[in-house]
Image (cartoon, rainbow, N blue to C red; front, side):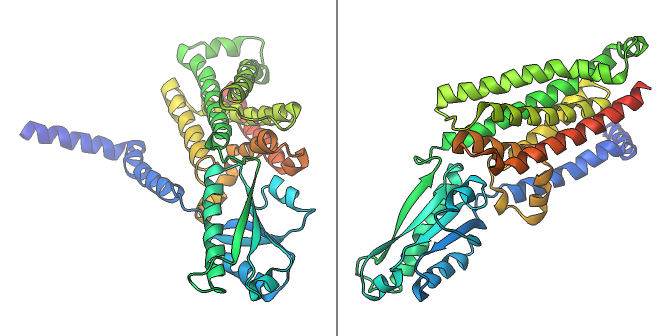
Length: 366
């Protein structure tokens, strides 16, 4: 027992001296609890909605108020027949409530009438939940104007855009493309330069008539080409195996994938400039690629339902912008102006991380 306690005391002293291990033991569990506790949220809140009110009656305003005050919807725009498609293409709204002319008169004369709800179906899970919310609110509002046993005066006519069958595959496959592409690109690049350090060949490379920029580009270009081919192969396989459509432009898709890969490779290069072993590089690459892409990109959990501080953090996750662009290209066939800001964000992220990695590697090279 005395020997056991002696070993335990020695280990405690070692852990106390090793602040990195102590931080991992104490801080990482709390970090994961906060991340998973706040991000793992299946409740759909703050659904952005636009209203096309063609009646402008007290009854139509009451219906709009019922949606807004339900706690599930945020009214963000007024719509008409000209703005419906742009609003849905740009992801500015998830649903559009269309109130027909004559609703107030129909309700007052006990004549049944239908309101229309247009849903963005690129996220099948969210669309299904929003559809349930809309049906419940309209049913509740209808009950205000009729006896309990009477047939409903208000009904809902649903139209689902981009994914009429609400196939979950069309929602999951673009996310999987981003997820797989991000991990493979980051991990492969992160390991490439660290491998040179571990084998001791880095010093030989430095002695060669080669500058840091040429070395980094020479190490990166093959991974970019391979990752690009792999990403496009995944897209083609998704179309062949899972029926994912291609409604947009292939050159624009190629541009979006290239910008996303450039940022991922930049992250891998930065990790390789910091890590000294392949094990550390692999763990760091998985941490910065797996968790943000899976949890904070909108792949599984809707960003609008996250707390504000996590919503702010998602702006630093490139997969957020890539997913928006990818779904707009393959599912919506939207024009590039509908997601141009997302492509710009991917370009800015790629430029920032590549510049940071280049500065870091140039210092080590010198």
